[in-house]
Length: 93
Image (cartoon, rainbow, N blue to C red):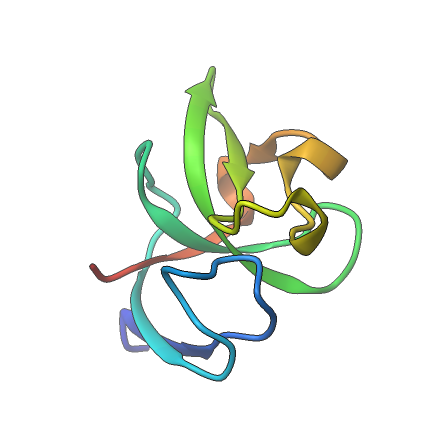
């Protein structure tokens, strides 16, 4: 299995950093740091999301979208911090 992954951005939650339809590359890992953009499994649905890690506490990650409009992002403000095990990949800068 390759450690690289390609993901197509769906939505505007990460605008202006990432744009709708853009294809981004990442590395499969469960390790992330504050400031990283990650791909992860939504904790309550079967959706895959792309968000930025803004805080880490005791192995849990608080993630948000980059879009300044809070209505554009389903993130930790809605579902709380995520577990490390839900992280699929870290997007390459």
